[in-house]
Length: 426
Image (tube, rainbow, N blue to C red):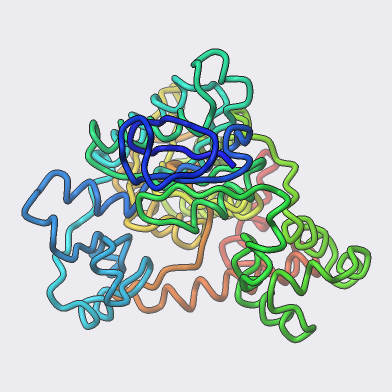
């Protein structure tokens, strides 16, 4: 057994009630502590924590970040979570559950600056840093013990302490041998936590957990699995891999691997996608707004398809236009909640396009980009525009139909018009 003091980063053999070096009781013990090197770093209630840092009067108050035109919770502090508030909750429900909450509009420029600072600190430890959203990422500290004269666990404890002291926010750390187990570990001890899972502990630690805790197993898949008798991770562990593969295809293989703590993904900055986009160059310059809107819909659909394929969503929507003189113009909007839907991209970019299409300027290219990416989640409600939920459901249904019957199975009116125009290079 080995123990780590989270106050002074001292690692020592055995267990104790207090650190022999600084007498702190903030200790974590595990047999594999000095040898595991893959970590998941997750900022605790990131947006709300930054707002409390900048306004000490909010320290002991429930804080909700969100609202605005979307009318939903982006994130909330842990005090508000005690009343049942959670991300993506409609604001009226959040305020009903926590009527004393302080509601703040998000300041993404401020949050991004803190995120960049954290990333720089991670990269000072290892080049193997892979951020997966503005407030979480993975690091692989293999081989860094000799360079820094401390094992990975000690480096991570020091990192957490410095972030708390210098940036005024806290992080939770999960340490293991691969990304999946590191992520599961970080969820076990929040906020301001540090948890460890070794591969040989998967059965005991993950076995009793609901199968929905595995990333990629959503409500629909969970219901199907429950109908087949798989409710807990331990149920999947007892199943034959071939049976799961035949029954659920690639999802069955993914399920079996995760239930056994297997994850072959590496921590690699090269795999970190910064943005997703699509663009079209026209065969002839276009100044007509209606035609440009049809082309805009086309690139929104393509961008959305790519985002869905990679399981990502984004906060920043960027319209790109190139004039006939080859000068490029870009306009961006930051959303309250991330999206991967073509409808949302189009409705966000359309006003930007309207302001640039007076009929006097012709364009040779149009593009749409999605950045400030994060893993995709559930579609958010929009209280100002209730129809967004129906449009999102319709788009998801169309995606399924195209996947099953081909791309031509479902077409929009704009798509049909594009085909009729039959522009050879579009």
